Image (cartoon, rainbow, N blue to C red):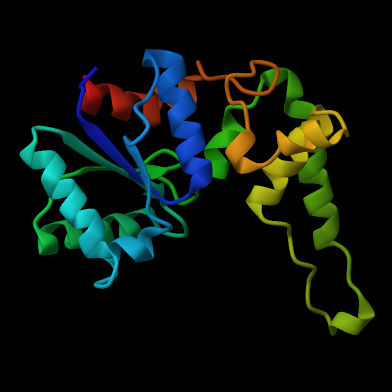
Length: 207
């Protein structure tokens, strides 16, 4: 594995997941190797983007590799275009991957849903029925407006909440910064979805 690399991510959830994923497969990640940007808008911003551009340039000058791993959000190709335009504009080098699979719209939570322990699939099936039920509910005071479907982050939070205990220490494990993705009762870090996506990307660029 290459000694010098910097991975630029959006938030603490991405940092926690990637640190554990890389550590699980290839060994501990150096403390300063994953950099939280706070979102793609901070990377593109004239005010804050220079900070990350300078970090990338220094790392490249030292022979290191830069990876940008963000969410695709609503449009994967639109997000890719925006980030690659910024790359060319500021003159930096990096390889880009967009969650969930570098092809489809979505985010980290879409990938997480795909790599849950298969024994726990009934939990997600229940959540799907819950969402479908919400779509059928019409409340008179809302004037015909549909109910809001909970965010994907809420779905992953609920998935862990039903698997963990109800003590304060167990509740802490649900939070993005404290999740244990190496817990095989909850997650499958050998999932084919990972090898076809983010693990394959990391293999190509870090080895």
